Image 1: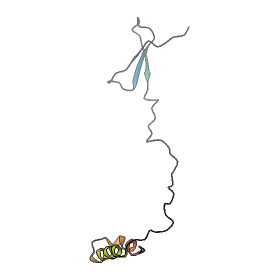
Image 2: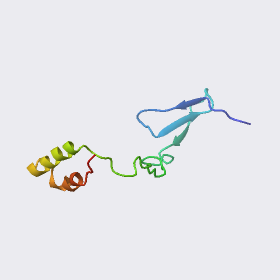
Image 3: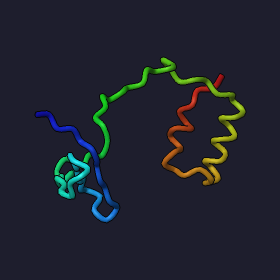
Image 4: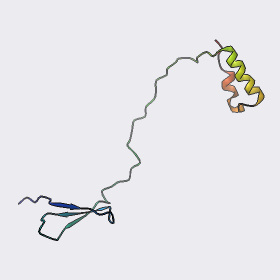
Length: 92
């Protein structure tokens, strides 16, 4: 004989528990603990995606803009850890 679920009961007081009733005339329920079913995962596994290079070489920058950036470096307004990047820029 096949039984079908007639009522599923949940409560905010017991969030990891489900009560199942197969007969509406009966007061007895089957209690199911769902805390064992839930595995804590921090996200789905994804393959590592490596973006394609948009340019094969550095893009040229206006000579006047390079001069302005280098003057900011010389005045100490740009931190010294970035100076090599600005000095390596290629002019148009």
